[in-house]
Amino acid sequence: MSIDDGFIATVGQTPLIRLRRLSEATGCEVLGKAEFLNPGGSVKDRAARAIVLAAERSGALVPGGTVVEGTAGNTGIGLAHVCNARGYRCVIVMPDNQSPEKYRLLSTLGAEVHTVAAVPYSNPNQYQKVAQRLAAHLSNAIWANQFDNTVNRQAHIDTTGPEIWAQTGGRIDAFTCAAGTGGTFAGVSHFLKSKRKAVRCVLADPPGSSLYEYVRSGTLKATGSGSITEGIGIGRVTANLEGAPIDAAVHIEDSETVGHLYRLLYEEGLFLGSTSGINVAAAARVAEELGPGHTVVTVLCDGGAKYQSRLFNREWLAQKGLAQCAPPPKRGEPIDVRLVMPA
Ligand code: PMP
Image (cartoon, rainbow, N blue to C red; front, side, top):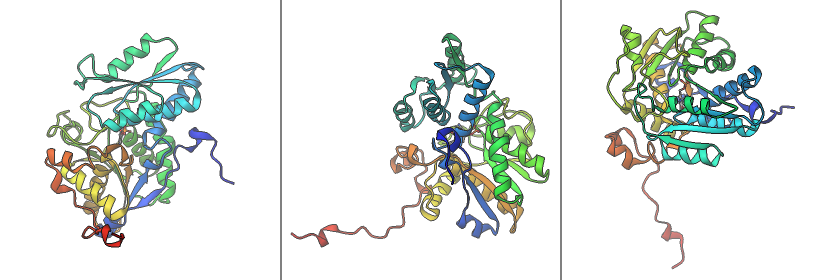
């Protein structure tokens, strides 16, 4: 018998998928942790579950309570599911520059969504700070605080890291992924290093984020500006990222991210969001650097459906100057259906 007790028990234990094309091209085992198969659809289900359960244990969250969070989307989606499953109200503050699908999905899930202007972190009306003040203002409410609440990282030390270690039988040479809060990267890296120090942990960083330069030179300074990726890239060292074992960082341009995403779709059968694209691009770089015979693990953070109006919309891609990075589907010449229809 194998039965999971509700949403909470269904988070995690995701498959580790061998990416066939990249593995063949590099002579390495390039493996993707299938976080898009979590019940709420992303890697953030793990942090959402851990944060709510920890708040229940500490007594901060009691029946009838409210969970407030500032999020670019997936943490809110995970929290909305967890709140439905545990009987809490969910209030989400989001910047106004995210995929339209995410706002709609959050409302469908029953969360109360508040959109605020996308402004820099230093601005008091930045979405995370609005969420913090809102939680303080409401009675019987907690602020999930995914960026600096280290329960987030701990969720990956307790679950994602051990799963990857067990699924590879400890045969893993490198791990790579990008950071939004840094919870996934830091938690998995901490765990893998505790098992074997030689596992190479490489941070993937998109344009506009300051972590590539931070790892390279110790200075928080953005490389490039603006990215089509959503939910990753930061300008500060969060509490979750603080002290993470980072061996190196790679800067990945959006053109490379989009190219990998479309190849994952048409050549691997995997329909994924932008952060999976950058993570796989980084895994390809690390595999090439290590040479054949190594095992490189990365994270397939969420599915592509939330991004159909952007990443998987060729007009939108063209506006971003990225259309040439997206190969067309391999379906041959269009068929004339009228040929098989009576006149
Ligand atoms: N990928 C996606 C699709 C996300 O939504 C997020 C979180 N915003 C991340 C990656 C980054 O994960 P983490 O917060 O653990 O760094």
